[in-house]
Amino acid sequence: MNRNSKTNLDRFDAMTDEMIDLSDIPPLTDEFFASAKWRMPKKKVKVVVELEPEIVEWYKLHGEHFQDVLAVALRSYAEAHKRD
Image (tube, rainbow, N blue to C red; front, side):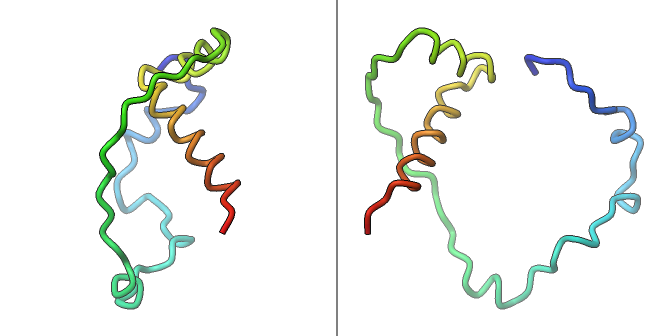
């Protein structure tokens, strides 16, 4: 992690499975699994893109896999702007 977390991780480490509140998670029913689809990751295509240095630096602040984060941002943008 690049930044110190304010989360008390020792408290989580001390928790047992029985101590975790799962009451707000709906059960997975047979109906759910009947309509579920197995999705394999698509093969990635290498693309060279020129970006402003401050954009690259901002993404690098979010971890060593910043390219993956950038890809998710591009996917989100593309999906939000789809034209059917």
